[in-house]
Image (cartoon, rainbow, N blue to C red; front, side, top):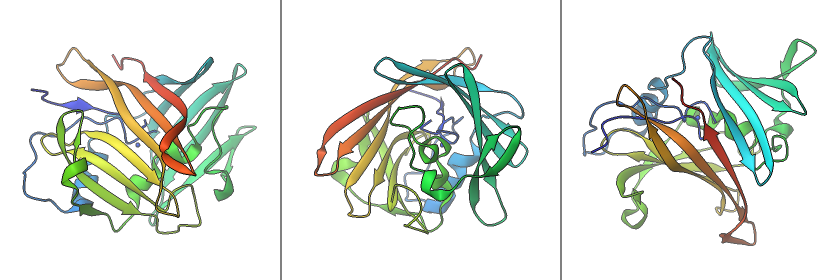
Length: 242
């Protein structure tokens, strides 16, 4: 039995919130969706000023990246053509914003760029930041036929975009393990209600302290004309945090 997981977020949370150090057993009674997401966010193992490293991979393209918690923001850096680029997910009293750095100065990233792929991969700024984990009005939806991922029984949390004109997704669905709170899958749904992108934990690694950390996440881009068909695949590979 897996005792505890660490998943980064997605991902990756991108993905900041997808690195999670999971709480003990969850009640099988349906919890409040907002509290469930809050536990997921609070479980993040990001440590102040300590980088967590990995790479985004698509075919022969490999993009090293790192992320770290710095005060009221999560800093992301990725390497392109031997140059490190930085953007931040900044937490405000009401909501969040993505900042982009240039020439040592930070500016607000235009919302039109949230859906721009990073360095030719299928992972966007919005994906890596996983800002949707902080959207309000989340609810648990029942779908018994789809509630199991990797053999694990999950709560399915649906989160609407408070501003559907911003970003790639009108809403997202997150699969959270009923026993230990691990995020196993995230589906990004477009404005037509069709699956646009899927993030899935593909493999995990066991750490010295007995906890688990995601080793690889698979990112699938779906065909807009046929959402059952995958047209592109990227992977997020994580280094051991030890």
